[in-house]
Length: 522
Ligand code: BGC
Image (cartoon, rainbow, N blue to C red; front, side, top):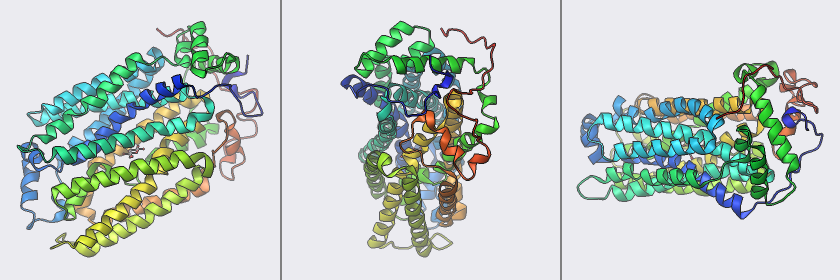
């Protein structure tokens, strides 16, 4: 029996196992859980720039937009209810991801995914048939609850199913499906906006039913992960499942580690308190700062509000939606670059390169918009070449994000947490991400109105800070087995103050609180 936590080896573990068709298909179906998140990110911005939608639900914004010439461009979309429409979802997702972590642990990943699909389906229906603003907001809350469940369980499911050596690529598969969801939503918005009679937004919002059905049905046919079966005490069934998933008979070492992992996590009675110990300081710092920084790249200003933003700087409604399609394509393609390069070039290289790229683009976009609109936000006629330059730099910025902070913001936290704090730390990561997604969505239109082109400089400042942070404080994690991650902190110029030689050593010294009454789940 290996020591608790699997810290018993000096060398990297080599669990036997192949990338079997079974596991590949399973992971592709599960990764589609990212579609509901992506679809939503992409759909709301487009819908909120459709005149017929604004006219029905946000008449004051619609009037401001129609009276275009006389008002300040920067402020035409500034409306509290409009912002609430976009951002309410993330608050709901934050709350439900906390609940979901319990469901996921006690009843299995599949049930959380199923809940995610059903809640999202209900939200899509309510939004598609919305007659009043309350239906829109309640619908979005339901969508948010669904996303909280899916985002909690899908990445976990993928990591548990994936063979050890392919975990990185399969993890970014989730981000890839987020970006595909965003792109599909952008394309649909573009076409649905053209529908005569102005009811296209109903199709955009109601269309969320399709990814919802995929994940709902998918969760019913997907197998449970061996880990989840062990957690519920059915060891023999789990061993068989592991053999099937890995495509080899010799799964003993991995199986024993999964059992040990499950025992360890049951015996930690206070995972949150555990997280506050000194030796977990680097992990806690990363669990908070990585998602915080990811959101302060300002990416969701583009993802949620690209059409609104393009509209603000003088594009027509159609051209704005088309530009969002272009940024959506760039997002997908650049994510693939990351899948290719993340284990070759390393995380730090991608973080730093992406940071410099985003910084330059933000400065250029701020200068372009500032020069043209000035402080009063009155542009007059906008030359075509000028619009092309702005869209081009926004695309280069999106590419920079999509191969750095986008996928790595999810990947790096998932690979640095030692087993005994993994689930608690991952919850911190998801919640902080949702909290700052909410805040950026909530204050963006207001900030655009007040900071004007300076908004881009505001985010550029944070990109500078986060790049310095990566340079000085984030160790390279490429090619290091999770079980041995402890050594990156011990040898780090700063973190070695918190992580001593005796921490995370072979033999394991997992802090456990005996006497837990955690017994079999379900
Ligand atoms: C982020 C989202 C963002 C998306 C863009 C994700 O990693 O968490 O907030 O909208 O990337 O592709």
